[in-house]
Image (cartoon, rainbow, N blue to C red):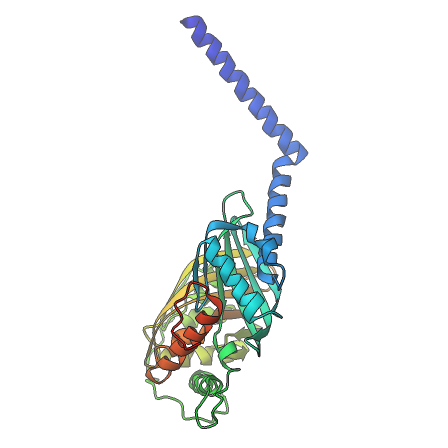
Length: 360
């Protein structure tokens, strides 16, 4: 018995020594790092391919999706590879045969790839341009994607759809009114052509002391602003800071401060919760869900943001929020029916499993 125990101990010792030597060899040869670098490059290549796929290329990218792939955008929810295949064919081959998407900024941390992009093309014969951002989640140690979410504004498509009857307002007119009303409410010095909604401007803003000592904290704060904490982010905005969302374009930290003051004056219970986040090479990206009331409209909206820092600092030079205006407009009684109608129209065009209620 003692001989057996001694033999086992010697065998275990030899295995440990050989394993250590193997690890040392891999480290010296760069084996493990080389494999990680290769996987990273392949994942970036896959993420770009899934975003930039065009007509005739769907079959080439389908193997990168898992059988249980889950996909979401502001209108569509897809579950499973069969469903995803039908969706891609209807969207790209049938509804948008000339669709072109160009990736701009991208990050990859662990199993999460994020990228901003610009999309151009026609949808059922109507030309449109849209900016967006996407997040992909890979299975561990794999180039297979099991989750994808695209964030963009439905308004970019809706703003192109006019009514065939000149006496009936089209979605383009509704979008103009909504965007104009929003800018009247929140953009300082905007030459408003509509009366802005009334709001209580006497809310007191309280500066919270925050221990912000690196880019992750600053990026997260900028995404999770609320009626109390928003002043604490202003010192981290560079002199040449610019901000964009589907409606607003801001240039300078002073204008951003006025914008936030107006936004939260009418939205004191508006809160945003960060979900997934990445930080690579001075670029922070995060997905989030926003809930609350904006000028009387109850909203619950998912979104995604990109924050760019000046290299090696905590000073923010650029940020953009991606969300669907439809998620806000659907909370406004006068616009709800139009938004639901547009979403039904879109689902009928791209989702093969949707029970279309429109007259064909």
